[in-house]
Length: 260
Ligand SMILES: [Mn+2]
Image (cartoon, rainbow, N blue to C red):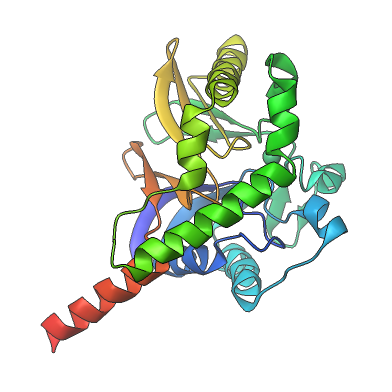
């Protein structure tokens, strides 16, 4: 069991075919936190308008999240733009899960973090066209192709994770500028309100860095990066990347062979 002080997740996109629910279910079953923050786009209500894909693994993720809340983990849900209708429940709760438009996390080292999804910073960047494309068909097709390629690499025995979607995001000039503008907007917003750090999601680019003296953290997503942000008991933070399924299976088989 992985014991952490805090687990931050965002952009899970339950209800979408590309959601890496099995990998997230594995993490949730193996990890216990004191605090769990769900920073938006957890259930993709927007995509489910067009088409619903609800798998057993996605169902398991939802149940594991609710189970954590029942077991005493303090769970806070900050809805994003893909689950925006749930913003109407700001200040309320679903069972044990608190719903907040924004939240504040007190780190074990005394730092205060502003927690939000991050879609409000889209308006502050100069790359509207890229944002529209990213939220649309092009991005979904890119992720689908990326998963197919990843499966092929796994089948060929390559254990390292390489993502076509991530590579494209790193290389497209519009994308690079958009990400930089977004990160700076988020960091400056946090600084202006007097926080030491900001934790958000939305752009599907996991990050942990200092920007203009502000601790900027982005959880990433469970469509492409399969990443989570964790805080250890001493306040240190780290990004966790879930291993691809095939690699995880091979590793378990190896461990069994060694144990046997
Ligand atoms: Mn979003």
